[in-house]
Image (cartoon, rainbow, N blue to C red; front, side, top):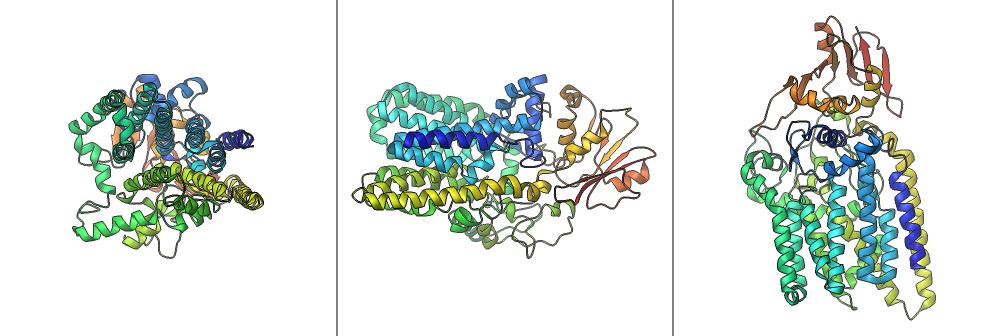
Length: 562
C-alpha cells in the first residue's frame, strides 16, 4: 500500500509542478527574468548581463546572488530556447528533485509508511509548490540540502565512503544556491557532527576526506568575500535586522530593539497562523503564496505534535531531535533578515499590495517587532519546509505505532487523515490554478510580455521607446523578451542612474539602444516621435493606442504612439 501511495503521490506531484508553467503564476517576476537572461548571456558569451565572466556571485539588480540556479538553466535554454516556460521548467525540475529526495530520505529514516506520508505531504505542499513553479533561488537551495542529507543518511546505513563524499559535495554546492545557506549549511554540518559524533569517529578517515572536500568547495566563495566584502555584504547589511541602521541617515537602533525584533521575527515562523492558516502574506514585489492557505496543510498540525511527542517516548527520539534541530537551524537565517512584507506596510491592509510600486505616496507603517512577527517570509525560511514535511511523516509513523494494538482505531484515524488531506489539497490546487492567477498578476509584472509583443522587433534607433520605470526593473524584461544579444548589451552604451557604495547599481538602467526608462508623460512632452508605455496608474496625454489588462480587467499598461 505504501508503494502504491508513493507512486501516485510522486506522479501527481510531478504533474502539478509542470502544468501551465507559462501562465501560472501569470506574468514573470523580475528575478525570474534576470536569472533566465543571465543563463542565456552566459550561454552566448560566457558572461552575465553585467559582463562578469562565469560569476561565482551573480550581480542582479541591487544585490549579488548565488549562481547555481542560473547555471542549471543553461542546458535547458540551449535546447528549448529563452522562454518563460523554459526558465520555470528549471525550477520545476529542482522541485521534482526535492520531492524525490524527501520521499527517499523519509524512507531511510522512517520506513515505507514514513516515505508514503512524506511523498503525499511534499507533493501537495503549498510551500513546496510555490517554489517549484517560480524560478527563484529558494527551490534549488532546498533541493540541494535535501539531496545532501539523503546521501548522508545513506552513508549512515552502510558506511560506504562514496555516500559521505557525495553528501559533502552537494552540501558544498548548496553554498552556491542561496545566500541563506551561508549561515545554515555550516551550522547544520556542525549539528550533524555533534549528533552523530560516534559514526564520524568510527569512520574518521572518511569523515576527514569529506570535510576536506566541503572546505575545498567553499574556498572560492570565501575568497570572493575576502576580495569584495563591500559589494557582497551591501545588500545583507541593508536587510539585516541586526545592523545598527536600516537606511542611510537613519538614527542608530539600540541593540535591545534589534535583538527584540530578531526574536519576534524568529517566533513568527513558528506560529499556527504562518504554518497552517494564512501563510506568507507576500510583499509589494512578490506574492509567492496563495492567500488563505498556510505554508503546510492543517492535517500536518496534529502529526507535528505527535512528532514532538516522540521526543519523550518511543524509539525515535534521536530522529525527532535531528528533524527539530534541522527546522530551527533552517529558520535562524530568516530571523535576522528583514521580511520584505514588513517594508512599506499599509494601514488597514493585511496583505501588502503591488500598487505601492506604482503609487509611492501610499501611507506606510513604521517597522516594529510586532510588524516583523506578523510577516514571516517563506523565501527566507525556505530551508525549513523540508524538515516540517519530515516531522509530519514522523508524526504519522508515531500514530501508527501508538495505535498498532487497536487496528480499528488506526484505520479510522488514517482514513480521517487521508480524507482531510485530500480535501485541503484539492482546495489548494484549485485555488492555485484558478483564483491565484487573478490576484498575483500585478506582483509578477503581468503585461510587460504583451507590451514587448506589441512593440515588435527593433526598428530604427531614432524611434525611441519610453517605458515607465514604475514597477520593478523593466529593462530586464526588454532584454529577456526581445532576446537582446548579450554581447551588444555588454559592449554598447548603457546609461545607469546611480551607483551605491561598492559599485552595485541601485536602479541599474536608465537607457540603452532605443529604450529609455523614464516617466513616459515627460518623455511624451520632450520627444518628437516615439512609443510610450504608461502604467495603469499613469494618466495618458491622449487616448492609448492599445491597453494591456490584468486578468481581472483592470489596466496594467497603456501604450501611446507619437
